[in-house]
Length: 389
Image (cartoon, rainbow, N blue to C red; front, side, top):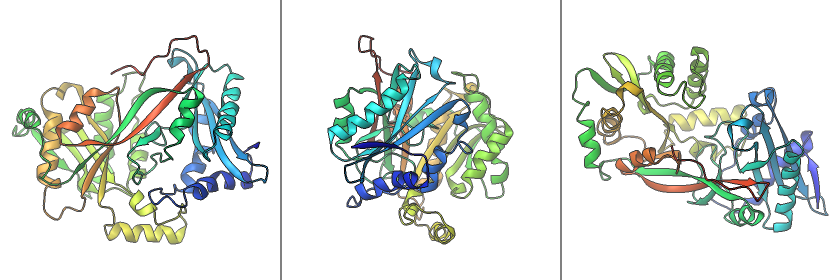
């Protein structure tokens, strides 16, 4: 077996094509868009290259056939936030062969050690946490957009090499409709605000979309800016976020809570667009863009995906979180003829029991489980799981 660094067009193509060959008989696998993967490793598109670096390898057998791949990366800006400098590996794919897998892991670990890194997390993304993060271990159904899907035997490969469970990430699911009831406790909390005339709970209108980023920015900055080093969002950043959201957004799924006309909370979902992308074979050329628009117009997506939920601090613990969910359910999700059959909520970590309880109170149950692993290079050091928040 031979490791080949991904440095030019041919090796890049082989990196993208390996999972296509591996999963060709798996009816649940959905091919990611090539451009989504390519952009992660393009310094002109991924700003993490400003303070970090990444490398990729393909692993070939004696006949020159690619049988494995891996990426490893470091972000110098976040290294000191851990008990030890920690890098990452991701985009791992491999045949069911321990020798091949361990050769890929060895290459990644050696590269990190050369840069004075003392631990590694994986499989993770060289980018935002909500994408390409974790190893699927339960719930082998069609993946949501930019969520990892892999073979079950990968779990044995990671754990056999020495990776330990750092945290679990849950995807919760609940059917739309009144057949799955919201808990009585949530109704009790919602009653504190839902009938208060100073509060309003609604989705935005199409005309409102172009200014809804201002609503989002106001809640985001009050809810998160300053906590755990999170920087305040600028208007330009908020506008860019909603510009990216616009091609896939359904305004009926973009809900805000207002207090005397000021936004104080949001619950934002999008149509689960992998239900369209699974028909595009990883390519978003002109023809497939037209196909995408047609399938969106014909309402092919029957699943909605919750992506962010937040309430400003001064309105927390007043029942507003519950009221927002109850209003969404009663005034939209339970209405006859509603397009979406299911709601899924990605990326709820087991270190966040408060958010887990919110999901359970609205009648959602765990549908998928991903694991983020960590391995300390010095085995004499104490291994600690991710702290509860």
